[in-house]
Length: 131
Image (spheres, rainbow, N blue to C red):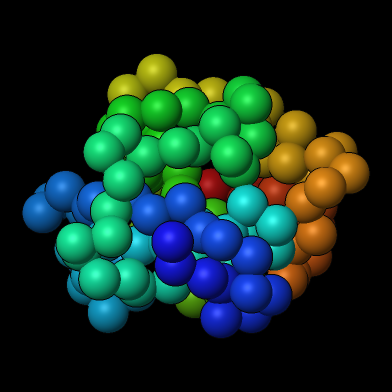
């Protein structure tokens, strides 16, 4: 298991499809999403879980392509103003794959065991206004 560089919790490792790698940190083939602080980092592709255990992040977290796109979107939220085109594209991709982005983010805001390394609630409001 890979640990989060921000809080040392075990991350959920996710393989990133080729067409989404431009949105991954360092164009990585796999990323780690921390279920505690929501940090998204590049990880070794051999550590990617198949399928990813998104239920470790939050029970309502979508799986499959929607979950991958949402994980990458979460990684862009701390820099929302700069990453607005990427956030828009990832939100569209997650929703097209059946994910409910706003509902999932709202549930993460309300989750008592999630302590984001950024102001998630504020970023969700900004995302709604900008995207």
